[in-house]
Image 1 (cartoon, helix red, strand yellow):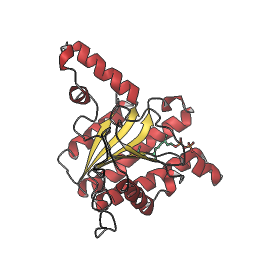
Image 2 (cartoon, helix red, strand yellow):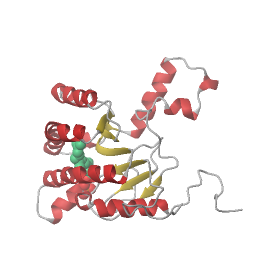
Image 3 (cartoon, protein in one colour):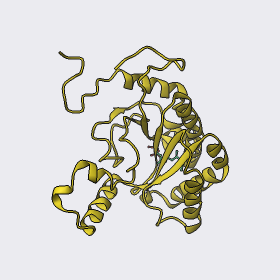
Length: 244
Ligand code: FPP
């Protein structure tokens, strides 16, 4: 898949959809003698840089894992801190994101969140719904198994005939139904797990596991990830297009 570099120093074939598990905030903070929430704040600052990088590199879809269905089990102050962070991101960044042409979408369940926060998220989604430069899916209170179970329940409720249940139909019941499957999934911090993230959609995604903690994963690291992706031979269960 490697091609000549373009003006951004990137190969021609860049991933349309990048998804990121932003891991390592806690360890980044610990290494500096700071509380874990300081790591999440630094991670949020970094997110702004990476969104800019994605726009610059022409990535069309970015999905970020901001809060999983399992993260409710973290200490109460960390959970409420993460809730405050999403509220602050919406309050402080929405105008700029909208100006940049970013469309915000939420994947997961809003219902467990504070009603004021739910409304903020829904308003942000509504405000940006026609933006097309970058679709930003924020996975907040999201879990891959939960997403699959929700799809199954809906399909059963709608009494869809068994012979109509194809991968395409099933995919249309996912929270990400209007997005192509992720081409590249990055998990920072050196952890080698998928942690219930996009488990249906990632069937043929390319994974990339840098050891850098999320707050330090900068535009240059993103560029390296894209170059690594461009060097992969994606076969989708078939044989290489390079073989004869
Ligand atoms: C994983 O690091 C990170 C999270 C569970 C939260 C990530 C959230 C942000 C960066 C803020 C997100 C922005 C929005 C839009 C809400 P960890 O805490 O598991 O780190 P550790 O493995 O080093 O402890």
